[in-house]
Every structure is written in C-alpha cells, then in structure tokens.
Length: 630
Image (tube, rainbow, N blue to C red; front, side, top):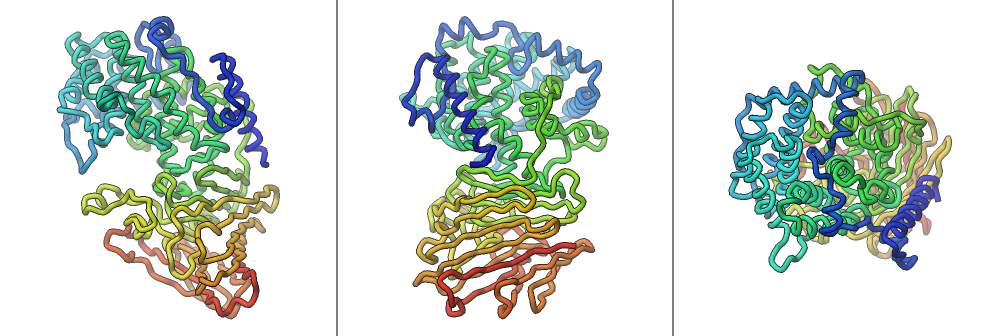
C-alpha cells in the first residue's frame, strides 16, 4: 500500500467519524468503509435557521467580499486577474444578447456562455457598482429567462443555465428591477428545478449518477434552490436534500487516490462545478457538509498536476482534449486555497500580460475569490512517481521539477465501460526533451459524430463507439491479440508499483483479452533518465493466433534491423527490440485514418511488432521493448 493510499484511507476514516459525530449515527463498518456520505441536515427548519439571509451569499458574502476588496489593493495576482475579468466584461457589452440556438441535442454552448457572462459582468458589478454593467446583467437575465425552456432533455444545459441565473440574482443583491427578479425566480423554478422532478417525483438518472452530470446538474440545482429558497422553501428543501444525497455517487469515483476516471479535461469540468458548489454552500450555510473533505477529492489536485506534461499537453486518455489552456488553472487554485499548497497555485500563469491571456473560463469570476483567499502554507511537492487506483487507474513517472530532459510517462489500466472510457488498457504516452513521442489519439467532436446518426455512447462489446480509432485498442499503444477488440468490460488493474530512483509499475491486462490469452502482464520501468522499458509477459491460450505490440506516434519513423528510430523536431528516439531480434517492426500509416468519421491526425502512424503464435516456444512469452532518447 503506497503512502497516498494510506493517507486516503485515513481521510476516509476521519471523514466518516466526523459524519457519525455530526449526525449521531454510525453505520455498520462495511457500509461506512465503502459508502461515505455527505452530512444532510437539510429541512425547512434548518434552512430557516442556517441559510444566510443577506445577499450576496453564493461564493461571495459580506466577509468574503471584504477580503477580496482588500486583496485587490495589494495582491498582484488578484489585481492582474481582475483586469482580465474587466477586459472580458467590456467585450461582452458590445456582443449581442443570447438567443435560444440549439446545436443538435444541446443548448449547452448557450448555457456556458451565459455562465461566463455572469461571472465576468457580475464580478465587475460587485467591485464597481457600475449602472451600465447592472443594466447589461438585467438584459442578459431577461433574455435567457424568456427562452421557451432550457433544454431539459439534455440536463447539463439546465444545470449550467440555472447556476448562471442564480449567480446573476445573487451578485446583484436586489439591485435588479423587481420585475426582473420576479421573472428570474419564476424561471429558476419552472425552467430549472421543476423539470428535474419528473412525474411522481422520481429522480433523473444524473441525480445519483457516477459521472460529471451529477456534479454539474446537482450544483446547478443547489444554486437555484438557494436563490429561490424564500419564494418556495419546500421545493428548495427537497432539491437540496436530493443533491446532498446524490453527490457522493459521483465523488466515489475519486476514491481512493484522486484519479478522475473521465480524464483531465473532465476533471476540470466536473471538479470545477464541485468546487464552485462547495464555495456556494460555505458562503450560504457556513459549511460544505463534508463535500470538500470527501475521500480522494483533495488528492485529485495532484492527479490534475501530473496530467499536465512538460509540453503543455495533457496525458489525454479517455475523452480528453490534447492541450491545456495557457491561462492559469482556476479550478486548481481552489485546491491551493483549501490546502495552502503553492504547487497548485499557478502564479506565473495568473500574472501573464492581459494581452497574452485567452478569454477567461466561465468560472473565473468565482475563481477570483479563491485567488484572494489563498494563503501559502508549508506544502508538499508533486511526486516524481505516482500511482492512482480507482475505476480507471493511472501511473506517472517524471524526472522531477529540475529535469533537463523533461521526462514524462503516463500509463493506465481501466476498461472501455468507464465513463468516457476507451479500449486503452495498458496504453501510455511518453515525452522526452519537449517532444511527445508516444501519443494518445485523444477525443473528437461529439456533435459532428451525432449529426450523422452515429451511436457514440454505447458501451456494449458491439457498440459503434469502438469502431473509432480514438476509442478502440487499434489507436492506442497497447497489445492487441488476433486483431480483435479488447473486452469492453475487461478491467486492467495496476498490481504492483515501486517508486524511487528506478520506478516501475505492472498492469494486469488479462481481463482485456477474454480467452484470447491465459495471462498478460505489462511492466513499465523508468530504467534511466532518458529511457523507458516496456516488458510484456504473455501466456498464450488455445485461441491465441498472433500478438501485436503497438506504439502510436506522429514522428517520422526509420525502421532498423534492431528496432526503429523516431525523428521529430530535430530530435530522435530509439525503439530497441530487445526480445525478438528476428522480427522486424512495421509501420501502418493512419493519415488519413481508416474511417471518414475518425479524427484525422496529421502524421499519425502505428508501429507494430507482430508475433505469431507458432514462434512462441515458452509457456510465457516475454516482449521487451526499450525507448531510449538522447
């Protein structure tokens, strides 16, 4: 058991003990171990006694706002980010009001834009009380509240829109015209909360789901419930109760070590809505009901940092984007505020010249508060070797903060049926000297696929999803047997991990192959400052015909007698075939990709080493490949 897992288990115990103390109940030990809950004292009486009466009370309140204004006078990070918010707010003033323009089955882009506008305009209004900004907020609120609906068939759209309107009402703190307030509260009830209660008060699937929808939609409903609590306390109470009961089903996915199974992009999305929800609960009730201390949640900040490669690309497994935003990470800043650990506070990025910053994220207004609340304490650095278990386990090796070679490796287990998952158990990415030598094909646009009628979201073995190169094992640096798909439900687990000067990790890939192999163990070793050893121990079965070792790259490839040479950006990397010198690598061009619907990646190719069954003379066949850089 590694130190991170030990700390996570200790946090589980402390968390459960605090819940038991606060609620006066203790579950059976087995239930408590695996089913941590949030505190949920919500009732009409609790709401009346504990909900802050004065606005603002969502993210901001009187004390928090006072601290923010003080920091604006002295803190260069807060000052610079506020200037960026002012810039974006000024630009919004000249843009057209939002219209209900649905793209495919989603209104999400409109909801997200509304949330961004409220964050920019609302924060500027809180600081400056500019009547022109207030008028624009009024116009924005009326525009979206007069939509026919907020697209409840795709409830993410409602969750983000409800949060936007709730923040607009709260941050203007009664300064909007009474008619606007009345219309906005009515919309929050009729277009926001009530559609979340289908006939018979049944719960929608997202309310107790285990993915980002839970975090986003419950967060939006919490914001809306607080905003209309005085108008309809009964509706607010039952919606808040459901949210606090439902959220742990998504938070369980962070356990035990903080790995977000949907990948780094979705960490930013789901966790972003988690931290703004925590901030709203704390400002409105004086507590987050244990949300921020849920086992594995704080540890996820380390996972996020480790997914950021030296090249500024992500380890882009699952449905993840390729490259991170050059702006500072606002969501990560919340973890810096919470822990006092400066490693999560991207000071240099927050201090970039305003002209160099992209448009800010839609939570940046709230994020300004977290920047102002950050107080550095003695913090721990990021480990150079780290393993995180969970439903999509990952492992990282780096060269540390001062590595001149910029060594970066990320590998994974998992299975296709995880949320936003792929058939990529055993796959990895590898960087050295600023070059991404081994690539993951990453994500591709949902809407363009769905528009054709493509069934993107199936999880069965024969679902269309797996025909895409970005989703199946043929597009990942792993092992394929008999040219067949991995088993979609075959869970690959990390069975061994060692840190230190020569870190290593072993992944059990056996379940990914069903009966095609008797056993498959993949071992990664950082055996030098510029090298990575990949060792596969394969036990064939009666069904085994051929095993293919695969590596995905966009580099130029030169096949050599003992392996291959990769060349990119004036640098090179050798692929050494240590175990099968009698077999040669081959190169399969994937530019263009096999299907018209596939993501087209310039220069993408798959390097293969095909090992026929008849050449396997031992009960256990060992494939040893070494990547070596300059």
